[in-house]
Amino acid sequence: MLELKNITAGYGHFTALWDVQLRVARGEAVAVVGPNGAGKTTLMRVISGLIPSRAGELVFEGESLAGRPAHDIVAHGIAHVPEGRRIFPALTVGDNLRMGAFLPAARQAFPESSARVYDLFPALAERQRQRAGSLSGGEQQMLAIGRALMSRPKLILLDEPSMGLAPVMVLRLFDLIRRIREEGYTILVVEQNVRQVLKLVDRAYLLEVGRIKMEGRAHELAEQDFVRKAYVGL
Amino acid sequence: MIDPIFLAEAAINGLLLGGVLALLALGLNLIFGVIDIVWIAYVDLVMLAMYAVYFLVMVYGWPIWLAGLAAIGVGALLGIGVHVLIISPILGSAPVNQLLATGGLLFFLQSFATFLWTTDHRSVRLALPVLEVAGIFVSFARLIAFVIAILAMIGLYLFLTRTYIGTAIRAVAQDREAMALMGADPRRVYLVTSAVGGAMAGLAAALLSIQYSVHPYFGAAFGPITFMICVLGGLGNMVGAFVASFIMSEIISIGGVTWSTEMGYVIAFALFIVMMFVRPGGILTKRE
Picture 1 (tube, chains in turn brown, blue):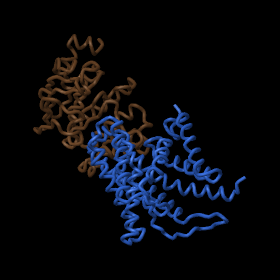
Picture 2 (cartoon, each protein chain N blue to C red; picture 1 turned 45 degrees about the horizontal axis):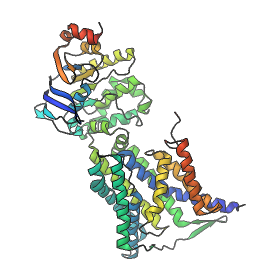
Picture 3 (tube, one colour; picture 1 turned 30 degrees about the horizontal axis):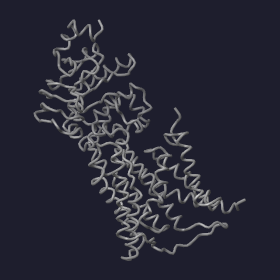
Picture 4 (tube, one colour; picture 1 turned 45 degrees about the vertical axis):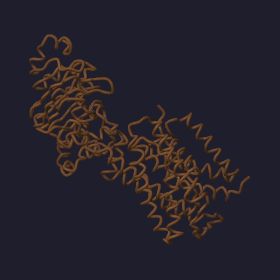
């Protein structure tokens, strides 16, 4: 469904990603793990069009999307839940979801999409008229995911969804992501919480200093000594 | 001691002046909040639209209300023009360049207006009555301008809160990048914002035309106070700008009656400087 071939990208004179190869098949959940500063967020931002790649190919459902701006990429069915949630704090929860359905086709489907999001995240339904900035961290993350679902995407990019959340909330969040998966969405997730995320996904990539160092089935990767020591904390 | 009647009259005049100032401040603030650029030449666009009103009424004989509507259109077009020709090419450059570019536009517009229309003060010369209520004299033109300004601001509020594109404009002001991820082309949102901000300048021009005469340096008379209001209210903060407009207009008006008009401005700017130390983020910001 998504294929990255030799993607190189960076900021100014700094190159954050070197020759990255990555693929996500339809219905799959894939994780990218790695230490801080490995380029995980840059990778997500390249896929969603927030920063252009310098070289390489980005193909989604047979169409080349390299060089397209972010607002065009989301129209192709890729929704990006950015690092730090980035909800609109001064808008109500309901208005945040309305903005998620900004695309004309998504706007038409607003009633059913919002019903589904509220069904998935009942806490949001109760807080529909509340300012999004007043929500707890976990609720804000749910809102960010719900807002992404409103665009009716085929592929969801999740960047550090568990960041800054209490351990209990992290578990609930991973349960919710599992449910979203079961609804048939394809997921590409970047996580620091390696142990949890490897239980959630089918396959994973290990990214270090801008290069893919390893890839494999999630359970195989989790058993690698080197991954266990460095990231799982066992 | 000043006659309380004079004070009451000054307070009412201050209130009426505050309405139009608020309209200007909200227009400027809307653009800043969304595009993150201060249009230094904002009130000079008002000046151009005032000339449009003047010529339409005095040369082409249009009724004032029709010329006022036309001014709104002229303002919107000027807003789009400024965005497309000046702002858009320098969006990614350093803030100081953006200030220099819109500041340069100010001098260009002032000089060009002087070249075209000389420094003559021109007025549409409407014979509007002065109302008297309990010994207080109120200019009908000011009252009309105030009422229309308030209605326009209610309209702006409804636009920003009840419509899809209005909500998107507020969302872009909060997080431009996140809104791009929602599928909104920032360039389109900027264009709509510039048009709305320009239309507000056009409406303000129509409302100012019935009270003041226009000349090429009109922007210098209302520009500084408009910026001061925006900063006092907290740049980008619409409610703050609205409140700050009335604080400033009351100080200028009451200070003007108590001492002199110049003294009114001195007090207003002195208060502004003090407030910048006490509440640098604007009067409505919560203290951290």
